[in-house]
Structures are given as structure tokens and as C-alpha cells.
Image 1 (cartoon, rainbow, N blue to C red):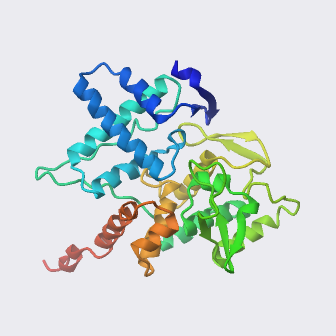
Image 2 (spheres, one colour; image 1 turned 45 degrees about the horizontal axis):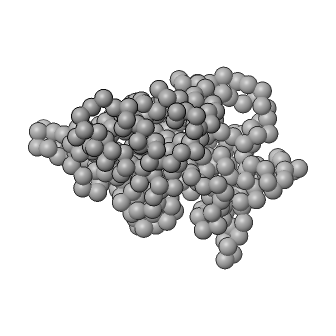
Image 3 (cartoon, rainbow, N blue to C red; image 1 turned 90 degrees about the vertical axis):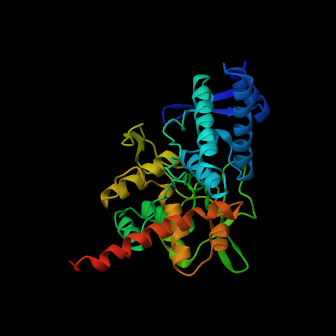
Length: 335
């Protein structure tokens, strides 16, 4: 049985698995459970192999995949020339896979609410626009965090594009120097430890709040998490609100980080599903471009394996420019 080949744990109330079987066996088990024609089974297999290949190329473990990762994959397919109908079929297959995986208690069904791209009458793509924060919104967000830890953490995410899991895994010892620049080694998805070749640069504007926060932990050891829970923490629930629980000194979970960011976003009026902790990563990318950087700069900063993934953020900027400088405004008082 496939369930005998995994270790089941719980995170945020949901079952999470750490598979010890390879992707081939996982794919075979899924396909064997599908009561469909052989042609459909082949289509499912082709779609999932490409999805697994994308995850591997981006060093994302299947058990650590997030909703945002699947959305980025959908946009990656659209940006690399796949037909909308093909992308629709791929997303439907991914949803089927996670539905099956959840039924076998392997992974939570994170794909259930992923939308398929639409086509208009002309058959053109209906692009998914990523929502980022403007510079003024980012400043407003930071003003919502009087707590030194939360301010330093959100500031770090805005200025480096770190994912929540990367922030959760960061240790004090991961802050080091290279060629005279202070850097933070990144322990990303699919990694067993920080990779010395993968890092973000900690500018003074990024580092100083972290330094101030660490002053509140004078006895902290180098192997301790960079950010730790304080006193009463929160156990996030499905509705995103969460319940308080007594826990202090441990590493902050990605779910807790998401909750802290989401509460800050809500407090400045960004309360839609379009804004989440992942919006901070998009903000990093768009601000790099708007301040004179290039797509290759975004690729390096956000550590994308392909520049095609970085191209997602240009659509977000174009949408913002369209709204801020709407040509319709030019004739508003004409008649």
C-alpha cells in the first residue's frame, strides 16, 4: 500500500506526508486508481510528469508545494506558449491528483480552488494578474507592526522576496558575509540544509531591523531560528483567523508567518484573496523593475531557475500602469 510508504504528520490541522517513494511510484499509483480510458490515463500521466519536472527544476518538494506554487506554474505554462485549452487540461489533472492524494492521506488538497484559465471568443489568453503592493502600501504595511520581530520579518520579506518557508527555516548562523556584503543563506524548498550558493543580500535597510530585534534576544545561540515565537502564538485555522496557544521560543511556522502578514494586509484595507504573504515576494520583484532593474535582476534576487518565471511580474506592472495612467481619464471632462 502506498500509505505504508509515507510518514504522516500534521501541520495546521491538516495531514501532511513525507513520501519515501519516488515520483514514478506516486504517479503509477495515481494513474492506476483512475477509472478512465487508456488515452485519458496517458494524458494525465503526461501532464503530471511535466508538473513534477517543473517542481524538481525549482527545487520544490511535492509535500511542500503551496497554492502559490501551483498558480505560478499555471502562469509559467501560459507564458511559455502553451495553449489555454492545454493549460486547462493540465490544471484539471493537478486538481484530480491532489484530490486523490488527500483521499489517501498523502497530501492536503491545496489545488481544489485553483482556477483554470478562460478563453474569450477570440481564443486569447485570460492572464492571471499577480497582486503586489505599491511602495506606499508597503510602507503602510510596515507601520502596522510595532513588534520588533514582526517588523523585521515583514521588512525582510518585502526587500528580499523570501518565501514563508524560507523565513521559517532561517537560522541566526545563516547570516554571514561574502565579498564584504552581508548575506543570508537560503534554506529553500526541497533542501536538507542551506545551500552556500543560494542567498539574499541583506542591505542596511534590511539588516538593521533584524539587528534591533536580535538585541531583544541577548542569549540567543547561532543555531537558533532567526525568528522565534513569542509568548502566546497562534494556531492558524482554515478560515485564516487562528486560535491562541501557549508556545514560545520555537521556529515560526510558515502558516503563522502567513497569518501575521495577512492581518497586516487586512489592517491597511487589502482584504481580498488576491493579497497574501506571497504578495510580498511579488512586491520585491516589481519594485526591482520599477527602480531600474531588469528581468535578470529579478531572476537572481528571487532565485528563479528560469527567466520565464520572472516574466510573470511584468504583467502586474503593466496592469498597475494601465490603472494609474488610464487614457480614459484624458477625456473625462470633454463632454
